[in-house]
Length: 341
Image 1 (cartoon, rainbow, N blue to C red):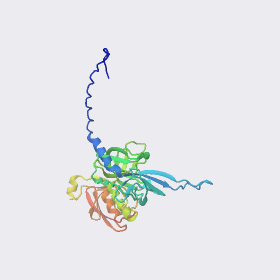
Image 2: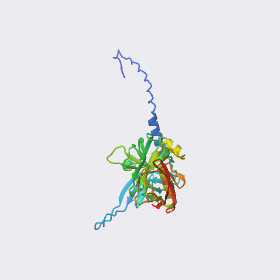
Image 3: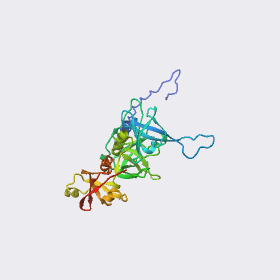
Image 4: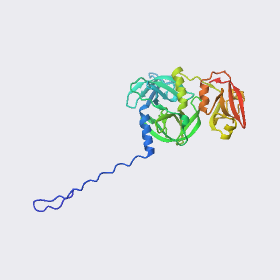
């Protein structure tokens, strides 16, 4: 406060200038609003998972009991009655599973089903006022689309990272050795502990289950498509396992030239390109070749790997099915007998 030199017995105060109103913060940009909204919608459904594994590395030292090994990961509630989706590698072989909710409550979880072939698992807790996520449609994703990952990397709960869909239709090898098809590649940062958490759109809809990161590469991370997760979770809840058959191929989604689709009067303009064949597998025995594009299975059109997997999950092994393939400029129909996975 400024003041003048005193004059006699009194002194005059300089008038204090009025404070100017501080300007309001600039409005958030669209990117920030999208990420904030997605985190607010999905965040309350994301849980931290703590597991204990029995120690099995040889006999214990004399006088000492074997100590259980611990692990952690993420998951998300997808039904109001406590079903939680996560990765198989997070809970596989666990002797106990504990779930920590966003508000801090801890609950013991029951393993409902575990499918290492797709690296997905369903566990369940009994707790009030759970907030399930909204499951989206991974088939509608576009390369370059904004996606947000929510999880618990290195135990840091409710961590949010953002990026874009880098590629679609990737294949990823599960811990069991089986190729998981139709995987989403993203540059949204994932770290140990993110596994099992949701990958969501700007609207907060889950489109993937975060699963893997390639080290030491940066920005190459993968999530299992939610359309795959829906089918697997349904089977795990009903049967405790996934009943599936296979035809012995590795494939990826391809778009057909429009003139080809019109010429053959195809109901779809995409299919599954066969990139590899299991030696003496069902597809190879049926006469399929690398480079063929699968367009139909069992008299139904096949537009994507997702379509084919959906049909194989429900097919009885040993039952012959027609397999429509485009080979060069010829449309051929083969007879394939799916085998039990």
